[in-house]
Length: 567
Image (cartoon, rainbow, N blue to C red):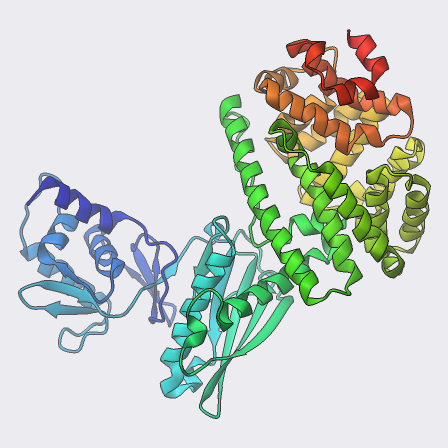
């Protein structure tokens, strides 16, 4: 037997199965070291047994030859006896309560090998590895002979959900999942629960997207399964449409929940099915941290594009919904907040088209959303962002919305930012401090409010206050200094973090950061002093490293006093 075949068989046996699924009474650990029965009993497997299970279940209903099993089970330098295979299979059958004459799991193919006949195994994964759970499945026991049809439908639904969520989130399938509301931890934050019932020989499925922690229902939909199975086929059938509507509605419900998740832009950012985790350590090199920051940008771009598609489809389904217009406008604005540094660095400039669209969306929706303070205050922020003569109107709408708001964590950061833009920094700082006092530390809303506080303090020239705010900001995320220190750092005496962040930046990225700071922050302050303070750090970085001639003409023209100071 060739070494290549031997290595291939062992690799198949040792490779973890991803997104496996099944309706077996057993739920296996991902490494097959153990399994849980429906009664809660835990079965333990030896290393050889686990390797055999991995190989057998990799391709259900296909024969694993004795040679393949021998390759998978045999350690280098150990005795290659086929009797070992029989011993391992017999032990597995005993542990699984399986019968060789009437097998439920492992069947013998005499003269050839063994075959797993139970279908793909249900996997018990580490909760931290999953973003979304499909399960549990309710009502199966009452379907009688229709049960396999419902199970096939559920497996297909799981695959469609995975396809809808692109390449980012991990989606696990657990038909017998038991998710306790109120439980804390790092498991899936959302689940899709399926309930089946039979009426007049047809199967109906009710799907509900829920928050795992609270049990809150985000979206529900119902589908009748066709008897010809056409709903399981293709990308444009009933099932894909059903899933897309379900996921869109769930995203909309979560993105609209500003009373719990802070301002609308933050709620939209956290509404996806992807659990965002900044897995970085302060001991890692600047190169590794930069690579992780780049990876986060790529992930966010994927999520932004998917959210764009969701909003467009939701608006097509509800063209008269003014709140969706505000969400769409906020989504376009968020592209520059989160990705502006990359867009400008790459020479991508769609500002005029995006501003035109934001203006049309907000003005069209404004008469209808003024009774909704969370929507109205976002509309005000967007009008001010446009810098097209709406500053006074934006302030009036924002102040009225703030007075009427019942969600202070949603309104306080935004009213603070708008007041600061209008030159009222003494009125802005108490608002942002109150917001930080109300918001749970470490959340995305907390990071958002801290960023606004730093933005206000740097514009005001309050370096002492800024240093303390940055300390809090950087304690939230290890990657934060790479992004914020070029904007908020000391322009004349950069900190070690600032110098490292600057050295890690190419000319292209330094210019992208400068343009980004100008567009989303500095230019929006009404007072020249505040504008100059806000642009000073990134402008000094570019001039110091690449010379004043590298500064884009747009920035040169807007900040002549700062250019003269740095020249």
